[in-house]
Image (tube, rainbow, N blue to C red; front, side):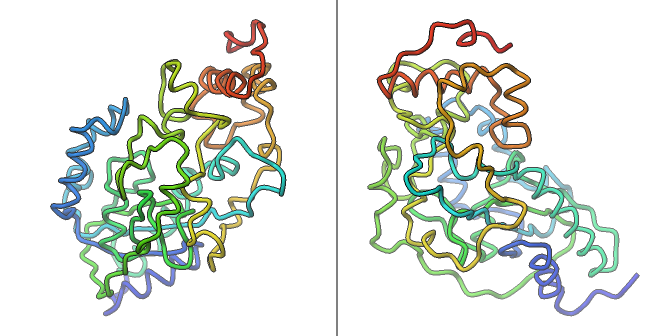
Length: 326
């Protein structure tokens, strides 16, 4: 075993960048009181919609030691998925982050590799917990504390030189690592492009998202059938929404662009909703297996497709495939 270096943060950052991460930072476990207040307020106001897991995971988000007893540092990580935008004239109905390989697997593999590097750097067998999206962690709060980004008015974390087209992951470890970094400035100022671009008014105020009116929530997270209003709200989007991020000035020419693992899948740029309704389970798996879309299943994807067809003024084919997942 090697001796612990005097500046482990610097060596860990070097290892993270070599693994393809766009940013890495370190924070102490407890979230700031204001972050806890904002999270509870969101739940009390019902802005999380029917995402009950956000309520169930409240304790873990506010008390990281419940995820890893003895946790002393949260290593915040960001990786870019800023792939080239869709071809000119193509109005893709699938959000940018879903037209690529599922980020959960990529981030976990990279985080596991970084953990091994950290163990080597610190010279001991660390106790650790890897969090990738689905774990109850206040990701953006810890990323801000770690100094790798600031949350914009659209509630997305904006990472300097990378913008908001980033995926986040966290490493909880039982080793204290500190680093002096100046606080990042407010990335938005008086800009309100993202709020103006939201087609449904889901951004009720700067940094305040009402998920019940968010196209991403409706097409991805909502498990039941749409109400007539919800069906209309999603417009032409089959999965997710890019409206509040595509026009953000920080995403126009970022210096840090997509990791090679996130090459766009060209077959997903132009998908006709009527073709979605014809898919069998095996066809759905062949088309969407290994992408973020796979997690919602064929039934919900067909629900989205029927709503999009109606919003486009096109007849919904009265075929068995509209109701069957086979």
